[in-house]
Length: 135
View 1 (cartoon, rainbow, N blue to C red):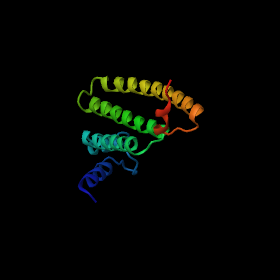
View 2: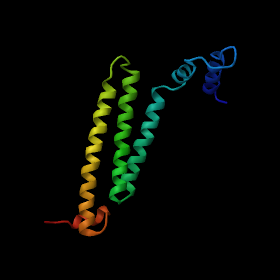
View 3: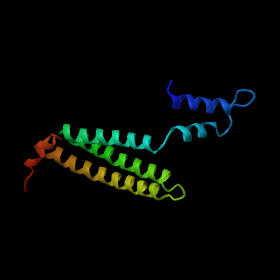
View 4: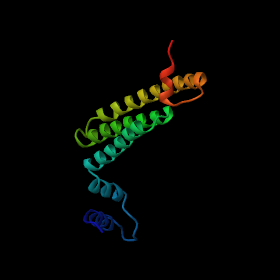
């Protein structure tokens, strides 16, 4: 076992009551003591990297939109994580993330409408074929 996991188990065991039932704040204590800002940033970087790789590798328009959504979600995760650890008494990170989710939904609906029009005219959703749409 790793030292961090061992400390988390010690915290859980120390918060157990007489009958072995965890106290009300045992889970919150374990999570606060073991998950820090760097954990959120690593997850966000992984999601961002997956989104970039999807956009670089794939040529399907729907998959490109999914990659773009992954990038926007990683940015939202960063806003929430920094909002929690840097300015815990303010909700700026959550508000920016909510705005980001609204913008992502609008972008997805508009992009899907454009993809439907491309599919109706070309019978494909490959991005490389869409360059022939002129005039």
